[in-house]
Length: 530
Image 1: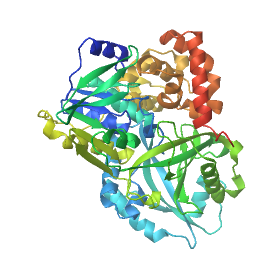
Image 2: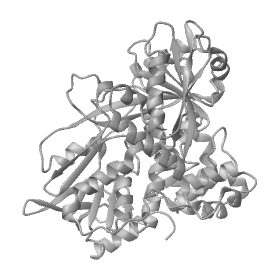
Image 3: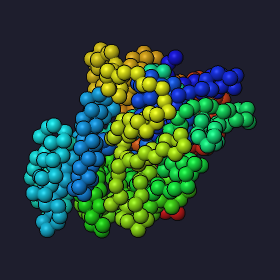
Image 4: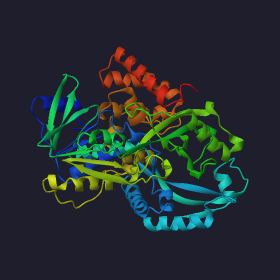
């Protein structure tokens, strides 16, 4: 079958008594859940993933889009996490070019400010050692000012330059899910787990809501893995009352590339709290982020940026580029995500909380939370190791690659545009061949300043479990975040695609437009009271 699990077909079979028994049921469709599904299938288990919203709806579509080791974790003495992250970064760069791509980071120095050049050199030397490559260097003021036009020269003393990587986080989730499904796994979005099933006090499965038939379907499995991120405590509390997750919000603002065109990442310390701030290119725009504060809102409601966070990020940028000062009217869009950090104590500075993951086993329920986007594979392996005693013998694995390697080269896919072809192969794997063949040359053109195309929209609508318009514009593509007014200029073309490939009518299209615009204005734009 091409594309993602056919939701209606699988639910119909479940209603008829098929596909009720599994080795592993994974709850949560972010990068951790996707990683668990991928590794479970590689080990030969019958595995099903369930997500109550859309795939990557939570944290995994709202990260800073970076695949990195995290210099501040190394500076804080977290050697293990940094080493693992850097080595996983190298793996992802090798396995998924076009999805995970290298980019230069520049950490600026100013006279009298810590850390200085020597301290950063020591940190970066260790960083490079973990990666197995000497990659950092000193950049003088002349080069720095050429790369970042308008940078304040006051007390500027150059920068350290090093390499990390960028990713479209939501597409990373979708690629891992697609390869898992191609390898025999199953994944359903918009399928809520209503309860855990218990047999003699042990978790033995889940019940899911069959929305089309107003009933419950009971699914059996000796192992249920709770990979719900910020929601992990809620599910775990069914069998263990302990609370361990500290939800922290990280928010970003996007400006048009024309306002501040850059091709590298600049990082510096905020003038107020000395937290690291990044200014970087992403999908044809420029991004400024991130914040790091306790999120006290309802986690079932999408996170949105606050007025205070807008001011914080604008102040950060304007402190470095006073001659290019931004104001609220320059903000193209925003995003905010809730990180599931394993909390030590509420009084602790959020930025000082550890970013490593934790795994708990409670009466057959394996809960995994915390950790970094970069280390999803290791997190998945730890979760499965915790479930080992309740599972059949795993099959031998001779190849530890996360991604299925495409059989075609970029040159073969599109000789005239190999960079576009590499991007597609990274994001869609072998499916890139069908994506190109099922679309017209006109649909291959970039949409505005982005590298997304209508060909990708067509593919997602047909084969990637798109249920709502926001699934397409905010997660399958990022057009809703990268185009003015949430991409409303695309409505005529998208309407035609939805009506012909999803059997929507005019009424359904208008309902979806209303839903999408409500979401965008409330959670991806400036705060409503601004």
